[in-house]
Image (cartoon, rainbow, N blue to C red; front, side, top):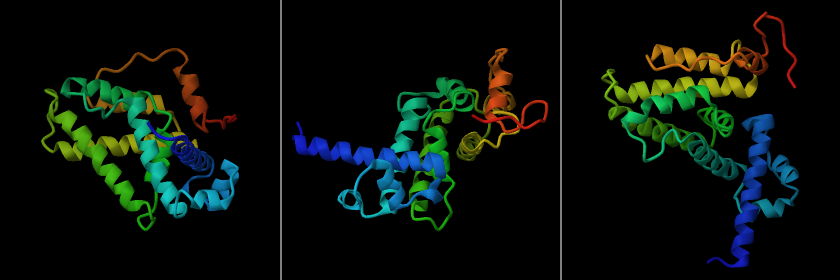
Amino acid sequence: MGSPRDAYRAAMRDDLLAATQRVIERQGVAGVTVRAIIDEAGVAPATLYAYFAGKAEVVEAVLVRVTTQYLAESAVFGGELTGEDLLTVLDTAFNSPAGAGAVLACLRSCASDDPIAPDVRRVNAALVASLSRIMGDAPRTVVPDLEALAELLDIVWDGMSRRLSNGTFATGYERVGRVALQLLGAPVRTPDPGDQLDDAHRSPVAASGAPTTRH
């Protein structure tokens, strides 16, 4: 059992990561600065540097944090899943955006020369490998290159998450997700009457083509 000091340090580190994540949610990775982080966390610069070497190291830690959150929220790449769960996996990813998904998509959109780019590549490889493993056990999988198919599905989800996070959908997350599932030959949920309204609220353009007011 850890000491009170260890518990305090763990809590403070978590607070700094949570503050950085909130900055990313509002301003994107480009908006992350040491000043923005400490202002959000309400701490002095020395506090941040007691836990991290600088901004890049904090953002790298947030990438690990939100990846873990996304996997936990969606259960998409859980170790207990088998090929029989493939359709549930796809249904979860394309119909139910996880809370951490938007931040993860934002982090994964970094430039190739960004300090966190190597970490992003490792995350991408891990996600593709996990999904590829699940698909390899699925009796309905007919595409021979499972790894490429897994990456294609990951790219589709990643793009959907980015558009959801920055409000640039012309249709909506659920509508695009349903079409993606149809193209894959997966069972598609019957839309609820309120789905069209939900999609319009997630998009800057309503079904009529007129701009919507985002709250």
